[in-house]
Length: 345
Image 1 (tube, rainbow, N blue to C red):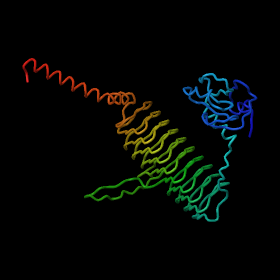
Image 2: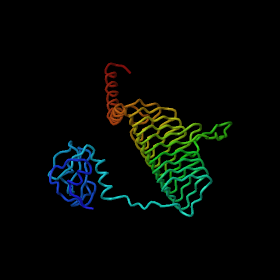
Image 3: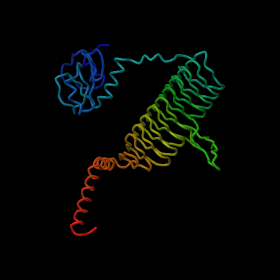
């Protein structure tokens, strides 16, 4: 699909600077772009790439430096570029259609309009699946589970009993929702399982990556708030509450009964102990070990996690330890020499 720069600008409500009749024949990243492609630049600190790219035009913001290439100025270049991708590369993933004859369906299952269920899916009793939802092959959906409308569940997802999943949720392959929380009572060296009788509630517009585990609550609910996005290989323990529009990046582990606020970012491999609170808009940097609650609107890092600037100072000091060690040795030697001159031992 070919379009002129002016036509693309209208689709994303942008402003053309340069030749609006430039013909765009494809899309690509700024480093990989070829002649005829349109690309984007979201971070002004990489503006030097604008004159190096082979792209025919660039979607960017007013903060970027000027370039000889035609540009489209938008408030959010990343989001605008995402819209263009859907035009030049429409989704043709080949989702399942209809109900495959191999599906094993329990009693009193309610399916909405245009629901699609792929091969070898097992659906328990009293399950409800909303309009236009798609269940790929090999999934398991336990009894009394509710799935909203326009939800997309990729192959080999296991959703246990009594789980509540909202609308427009995306769940990627290998994820398990509603597995038992890790609860044991240790008596005389033996570990006795504590029943996990709660559930999991996933709100609208959540996306859950591949091989994520979200444990059911011991009592009540484990909750994933509206619009939150969870990357691959994340573990969320029982009774955790994650607020709205939070980002949980790969290999994060969240221990039981921890509360995550709204618009929180937990970067890759961060680990959180249980029964703490992470305030709204907080950022936990990669590989941080969080052992106590984090106030709202703060950034923490390190192990144990501290305010970001404190950790930076600690790390800078650690780099100087060899010099400090040598200095102490030198000062010790001078003191010994002075004591010897003074006739002291």
